Image (cartoon, rainbow, N blue to C red; front, side, top):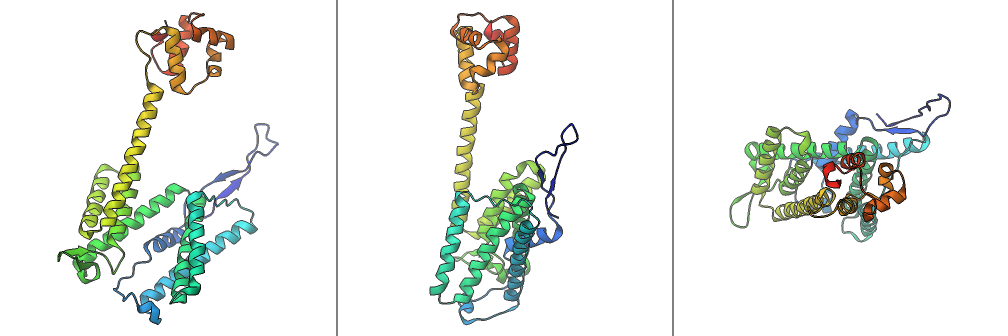
Length: 326
């Protein structure tokens, strides 16, 4: 299903207003294709890295070509559909997306000097399809839906890795440099990356999960990351926590700035100035309390006393006790 544009009427019932853009739920095919593209799809076999140089093809390669071919067809269909039906499809490219687009172009140019140009061209095609598919999917169905599908895909990959460790250990286990078994996931997907991605997505969707589910998934993902012995995964997770702590500090600082109380020994005018500066409000916002702009300025300078009704209005506006202004 695609987003629809609806023309709403004004309260007079005659003039159409600006079209309303509503996002709908992703259909089964789009959701399934998203999961398949996000997961790779899984290889389910250990392949010699140099096999692609010699053009060796197996069932996993065929499945991958089919899935990514469907992904490219879906992207082309959506672009053509939006163009001919004049639906609003705005692929907003911020700085990270612009950098990604530039990297894709440079990778495409590197095909000319590649030792295996067919394999390189297919890899560039995969990156391009994944890039456009994500942009279109997020625009049609929303960023939240996109993140939820990523969390579902990461959870499924981690579940497959956990089951394969017992059912087919040769598919996912390898010996580390220290001689210990390592859950690398070479036959499915990189275990460290999958677990790290799943943990980050899990921490960003905490409100939509019950506590038992959140704890269970957190333990499962953390165990897979620990067993993978992936230093890069732990580093990425550490960077995420550092950024999260920095964001939390900024939010706390902003909250304190907006909800700070003036000193106890200050005058009502000084308290009003303090709250006005720390709340982000302006003199114009207080004009409805005092009636005139000149009266606001006089109250701020202490030339005009604040009455009880005005103190109650100020208390409601700043969410403080009216007694601060009396």
